[in-house]
Image (cartoon, rainbow, N blue to C red):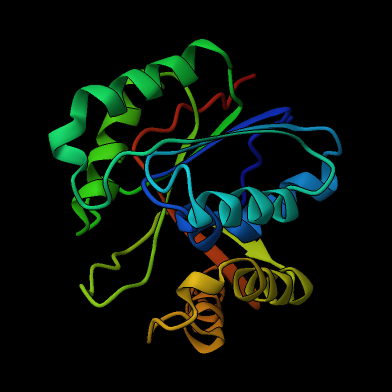
Length: 215
């Protein structure tokens, strides 16, 4: 296991197709980054859920997951499950996001995610953020699409527990779902922790990585 640092992280972009995607896939990573880098700027873009209960859940949740950050949240109103039919709107939103920030880290869904909204957004990110460190998070679901990740962010037990607590606290609209529980979230984090010699971890795919071994 090789441990590499990404350098100084002053600006983060986090995107999700739906409210709660970012928190489920990378909430522990956001907690970790924001606690060690007070004042880090976090630009979050969510494509659906705007204008209602889900948007308020998302804003409250991301505020909790990004303590002390300079947080800017945009939640759009694209219909859930219809992102391919709204490609132009989604593309414009991603390009507008790219135009207002130069991030050190981008958190995005995976390009091979089984959900068409997640997959479509992930593909858009590669066209807008070409020279950035893009970590593609995973979301456990009934499709059984979890793969073999190539990058890990270890989580302390305290951060892992905090992530689960915040997910339960801030997304009451999701508590009825059979997969939305402590066992699912901590169980996956424990498995990913085993894979990187940690107690808990979040795992990501990385499309490209440029090394500077002689720098």
